[in-house]
View 1 (cartoon, rainbow, N blue to C red):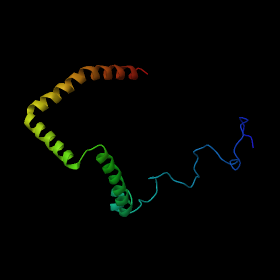
View 2 (cartoon, one colour; view 1 turned 135 degrees about the vertical axis):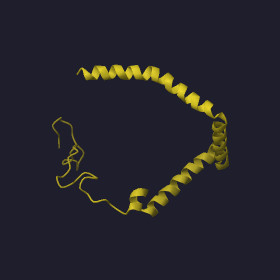
View 3 (tube, rainbow, N blue to C red; view 1 turned 45 degrees about the vertical axis):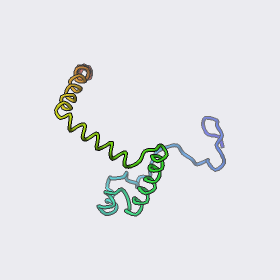
View 4 (cartoon, rainbow, N blue to C red; view 1 turned 90 degrees about the vertical axis):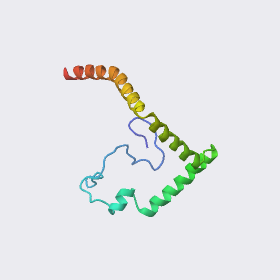
Length: 123
């Protein structure tokens, strides 16, 4: 019951192996295996009823959490509306701000990228 390192294994674990070897007949997912399910099941990520149940349970959990921290659905929609209205009112000022951020970041990122490309080309 001792393995090569001299450590004992629990009873029933004599044949346990820590390898990721698969039987030769098992093909990895997506290689040579026919697509499973209909287009709807592939789109949803499983059988429609199972997906609906999972979404319902997840919605209940998230909804309970939001209610617990006192965030109501109406508040979320009003905040989204305010965000869109604010972005619309900013107009081209928002575009100018995004360009300024991109240029400021590029001043740092592009030279570092260029140096990394030069050093990896030498190898």
